[in-house]
Length: 356
Image (cartoon, rainbow, N blue to C red; front, side):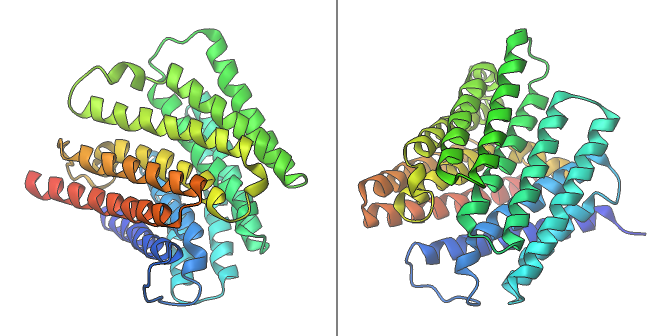
């Protein structure tokens, strides 16, 4: 009989390998003189992070929640997809596996919705669909800047759905649900328009990102728990700082949509979300998600604030360098971001080991 805990650690290993490879590729893209495992490594920084690391992690978390064997297929396909890239197989194979993983995820969230119909699962279903579209564009050999908005949609909508789920105990006015629904709808409309009129679609999606950030600032439970102590306050600080970066990304998308192709402003438009928003969410939820997956305690320690401060300080330097066209500031900020993620891993490992 398959030991599910061992299988979970295998999938976590695939996600961790994708994260480390993605950080290596990111460092190479910053201009650091690093040896490449293969010629495709640097150019596949995005898929390694979005599909291999984040996709595997999110799919694994939901497979554990559903408590059945078949949902683990999404995490397994996501992890293997990037492994094929690292081993030098044609990128089309990795993209096809990633598309399979996202289709699996759609089925997982549909199953969760059928078990407990709720608005947050609808948002998560839309998130998985956005992931499938992005992976389909990757498979169709479209430029990564065309697929990237859909990958952003996958992560932003998934996190919005999770925050809606975790904050459902709050009493909200009736119009709050309509505001969230309208923001999600406008965002998806913007993504759809981007396939035909790219700049216009990016601006519409950017306005929706700004609206989602303002909604989370106003209605997420983090606004209350930030006044508490210990882990609840730490999580709230992570979340609120992430919402700041989501709002900043929305404004950058509106202003610099014409530059959503390559270059410093493109770097700022993506990493305000992937680093500032998404990794803030990872930092916040790790003490809860890691134990739920592994059964191993991850106690909160005040040293966790170190990797959080380093992440945001370095990202401010990086984005400032992007906008000021300062290569040195961009590189040092990027190196600081990589150091923040590595420090996050070290602090979590230290917390686990000292607790044991």
